Length: 402
Image (cartoon, rainbow, N blue to C red):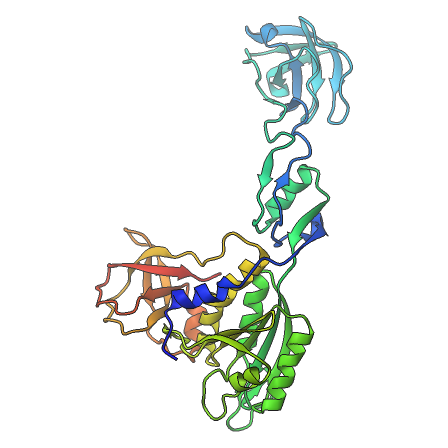
């Protein structure tokens, strides 16, 4: 099977993906979830004209010239409207959030007044509408303020609450089963025997998936035996996973058994091997309704593949409209040689420059090196066949999450 371009591979991954069904969740549990339908304001905010400051509610005509002495006829606190009406030569003591009394259209802040019993004197003229928040200045009933496909932030929850929604209709979270494979792998904290290495991929893959809003089940490490790998695949399917994410064993060596086990379970393989560095031996297919994404065992390869393919898949299943990783423009921080037939995703640092951010590839780019990946701010993309480029030349990057 020939190497597949990255763009075509991503298109295939997303082609059969659809947003998962909707469910209602309480507002306090909706952060990070994706709206399944537009959210309409059930009320107007504010519902009436309110005072923006502590002071005195007055008629603008009475304070157009200063100073002016007025009779105080009542008091207005937030939640306690004034029943009367402010007439000529009158004022009402008002506090922030208080409903403007009938007849009043302006608030003079208390710092610009002098009170003497039942009279108050304003020190300066005040313009009509000063320190008043008009009814509906924020939003009005019936306004669509949050659109379907939006991943909800903490600020969105504030708005939804103000719109008077106690529950929100959101798409179900994608369920992901993560499986590591390899006889050489041991969990962190264990003593290593000769030939063993610490299993690290799953921790990054799980964190990435959870940061995108997925629910993750850790299937642990399967040994390099067909029956062990097949049993883990069946556990993923029986658990109702939407995505099975495997790490390692995706190639075709004598000990790379993941594809063989998947084929035995009925894998419908879409592609294997992508024109990508790092990450060439990546595969994708389906087991029934379950998406299967097999990333390489080398740590950097596994992460880059998950960043490029798993994250957009999770976003699509979650119902998001912002699916693709967004490329940004930068300048090269050093000279680059011509590239070969594979797209290169180089780990790079970012620094501000006079013509925009400067992306400098880290000196070591081997796909097994995790320290450079942890230092990187972005992936610098070198397209297939890109010619040599000098420092300062335009380039394209994908920023990594901080």
